[in-house]
Picture 1 (cartoon, helix red, strand yellow):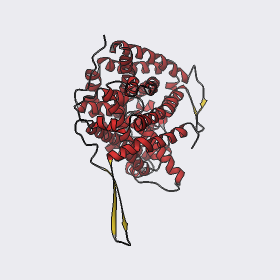
Picture 2 (tube, one colour; picture 1 turned 45 degrees about the horizontal axis):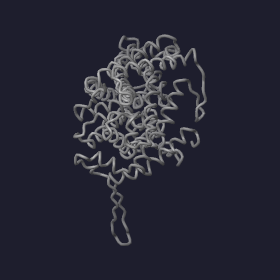
Picture 3 (spheres, rainbow, N blue to C red; picture 1 turned 180 degrees about the vertical axis):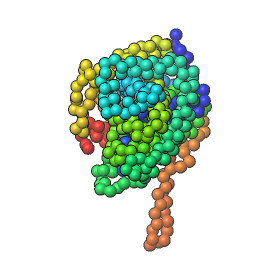
Picture 4 (cartoon, one colour; picture 1 turned 135 degrees about the vertical axis):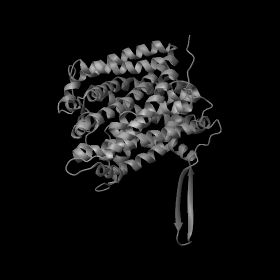
Length: 482
């Protein structure tokens, strides 16, 4: 018998769960690196503009699709338009591919969390510690399985008792830890006379030196790509969570809260990391991305702090663990909910099957650093291992395809009004602000204004602007344009 569909008990529960999905490893290790690489304040400005336009558009669209259809990603698109079910298939494939390697990275975080909490932070800062760990045959698999089982336990408990209850605990705790570490980072006195405040200037002040049109274009594309990670769109998560959002709750207000929460944490992640890394490692340290930043550069920063470094490192990796856990939970929920909606399985059966499959794929990817090691060329001249291939195809190819297809479906087939009506069906306004352009005709001494409402902006974004930006992003991912 098909299980009764759960729903979030309150709008704040939905916001915290959605924000928990959005605030993950991408915010903590990718956002600061991109901000440092792309001119500090320039990247921040572009990111905020895109968050208020593109991010808002995709969030409203996906959450509305979920609530309108009361279906998870796999079946929602087909119910919205009978010939569009394939979009849901790709949208569900994305988290299915991401979950195993995300849990591997979650296992790495757990390893470092334990190391710093047990006073072994000095050893974790060693040059070969990270490489020695991930190339091992047994330990990475063990930590991956532990992390994945923790995720499965929450999913097994359901939407209310599992996802919502945990989010109400972890997200406030995560925010407190982020703020505390960010404040501490600004007080750091590093090496060679550098301070945390010097790093803050690099983060906040736009650096346009030597930047031409192509450089600004790169900043826009980087910020656009980061938004996928930051707001969890194009991977079925917001559609699935939207299907649990009650009809009488204010959707527009919840979207605004998610944007504020996520952008605030991403901004604070930069304050946590950039001032500290710059103070101790200088500009060279800021150019390290991904695992190298999180598991190589930062442990060295904590070691440089002396006795207090082990405590700061423990708090930091506890915070990262919370962020990784809430995001991994949302990834598994998409797949589990899709299996329930498509095949009528019980939550127990769907969770067990997805967990077993993810463990099998996770073990295979772990062995990609030893028994199955190889290097595969990727667009842009880089090379990658098995984990990098999973990440490239899921994040750089399938996610833009899902987003482009969603924009075409809503913008040109079912029309934006269907989403706008769903988002405002309880009498909500679509937004009290928009864009205002003003200019002065000096000859006639007269000021002119052009006001674009948020509703008009949404229609323009979903029909034209977002698809074009996404298509360019996809071409960049394929290496066709650089």
